[in-house]
Image 1 (tube, helix red, strand yellow):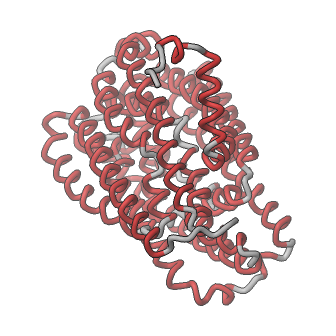
Image 2: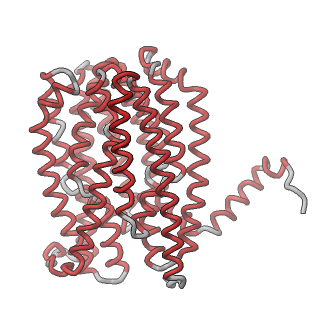
Length: 464
């Protein structure tokens, strides 16, 4: 056979036919993308709204206060996630298995245990935010008078009392459309109040109140939707199922929860506490530059962000059934799609990043561009292998993300104190990109090695 002609590749009809063939051969990926499509639509809409929110906020506050805003929001998020046990992943992993096997009482009991644990953790996190607020104001915002805002923003933790468990339950029952609508509603409410703050010139307090209102509505919406789903699936008295039903699983559940908590806590150092390090070691102005760079980089990540949620549920099912071929197809073809998109958008921002920043955010934010370019190098790897953590959890290696994050955390902390005081936010961007590249690459290697071992131990495929 001869090589396909250039005309063949440029022919829209031929390209559509190839795409149809691709998805017809990958039904699981098609289902993942369909479920992700609801979240993707919401995420795309939210991305546009988020960008508009960012433009209004950046113009209204200026670089320094924009940095203070980032310090306040990340401060609360870091404390909450430090205490959190990532209950959405535990719910998907264990409630999903019991539900798949028809063990509805056991499924309800696991969800009840997850919700109670998350509730306790949320209350502790809220108390910690209030206790640590004066320290955040002094050492991060460099203004003790902002302590009240550090504390008040902690309200969103109580609003999210069992939101992680709720998210996991909605994922199990494929309620992605409902999740998408709630996400859109949260974004619209936040945008409305930020626009109001912009026009009445209420400054930082107005922006923070807008965030609090929007996130509260979104979190309560997820919780109510999940509780209604639980009542429909397990009966109105589902919450009365005794926790003794899952006594044989306590050790396994505890191990999973602690592993994911440690992994998430270490991830805070490696990836999610960037603004706090810059605020602490440098100043709010550089924090403002870096916050904008992260915001623009996250716009590249937003269409990919729903995929781990939907992929995790499908991978967990495929692994439980020993459908190894489907596991390989899902991660391989998912990487091709996610990587192609990320490469294209990265090149677009490389060419148009400066004009976008100058036109929409004003020229005072142009120093954010170099940090954006550095960050995108790491995001390219992270997006391409977006499934790396979900794959390790599904295949029974929940401890590895914690192990690799521990090593990276030590290396990155050393790099932060060595490089950031001297080279500022650009050094921080380089450290974050490097941690993505190293951590994701090693996780992918371990996933494939573990998959090979599992396949050798259980070569047969269990029919659904």
